[in-house]
Length: 640
Image (tube, rainbow, N blue to C red; front, side, top):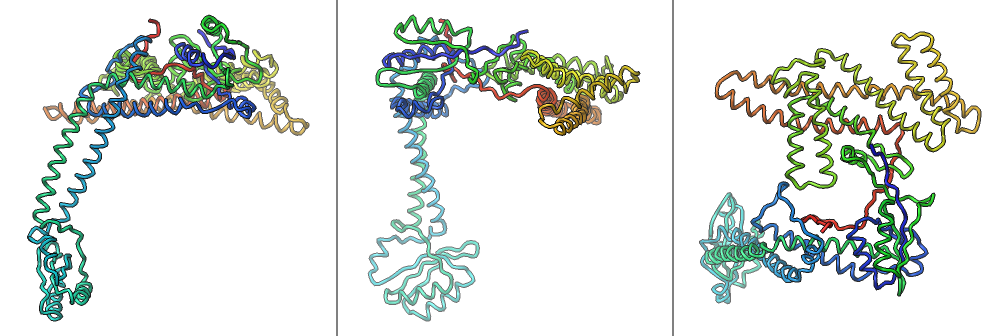
């Protein structure tokens, strides 16, 4: 079992500016060098004017954004719908470069931008027209337009709405105030009356005051046409806009046939942008540039050989990390352990001087997950689903690792389901191969805590390994073996151990009292530090009790499944029972599988992160992130 952090070497390269793009292309295609941003590494270089934002970066960002818009637009109108099960097209490096040089993409971008803009304007105008139609409702009976009203040179008109309860009073007051003014009720709706009031111009102020008195609200309708004609015009305009929109959508559908080609350009542009961002990290003068980075030790000589072969004038230096260097972290484990690296990275990657905890974490993760999920039916479904996802979907990266973790956790889930006699919560009665956790709670609890102690002791063992490896043998005795002695001695005493158990406990306790405060300078500080350290036995007790969740979650998952099965049995027999029972089985157990699986995953991680990592692990390493071609839509075959 490999159990390692990949040793890194520092690479420094100096070459002529003219070869910069070619060298970066070599590194991009090789994907083995994590390039350091020299602006952060050496402030004096910035003061010397060694960094300038390259115009090519801004151009690459613009092109990347444009091709992103093209892909997003065309995807909405493409008839080809992809999902997790759609296989990605595999391109060679040569094909990838050729696809990226597709000059047609800018033309397609122009068409997409034009269509998209026209669609936005179309929808905006349609919304305005539709809203305007609403404002004319209630005025259809008015057959007057602005040209007719303007022809009446000595008149003034008012168009608006008042509350229906004031209409009689308003009419009376208007007729009293003016012999010429007329009030016309155009329509009424929901206690509101639409009014058209016509009066002599000389009476404008007087009529206005009367209308204002009764809460007359002017309407904002445009009378360039009679309202009825206006509604007909707007309705026809809405239909015309809808037809134009369909035409635009048709053009978009036609353009969508270019989607696959545009996605390849997108991936190429993403890599181009990555390279330009890297250029901004380099220090350069008028004639030369300098690059610093980290390369895995096993690949360092090969990278140097490639660079020196292609660019003999380039200076390439490989060095071991200095004491104050913090090289990036790349984990290296065998195929079985490798998926569990995602569990470690979810917490934090190790520091360069720590060990990779993943191989030690893996067997406990599988064991604890299976013990908490503990259902043969759920384990089978989980394993089959994970295997199908791995075989037929395109999931990659950490998501693929998590699916593999679930696949590996499937067998222990089945095994504990058989040990507990649980198959979909008991829908198929099974005799437990070990015990029923419902009937033998204490027995399972004891085993859970025993497993927890083994887990904690393993964590302490890793700590001892790290201390001894770094030459701190006495620290391993003080901080690990004394704890081993005290905890084992106390457990032995509880189990009826004799004088030997008491001696081991007492010696270990005294050892902890004398050593846990050793970093303090004063006698009193050392004593109280030791006393406080000895008090830490309570945290070990709490940690051990945390493993009772191995019992609790196993019980919860099984009992919830049992409850669904009970509901199914209560339906009795008949067609309704068959339909209802099937529905409850599918929905209920799917719910229990998903929620129980999520809860089990979280609590298993919790045991690893708090109870296990807490004994030896610090973390905080920076992930190795080499300059490489990252693709979203295609797969790259760099071997051809």
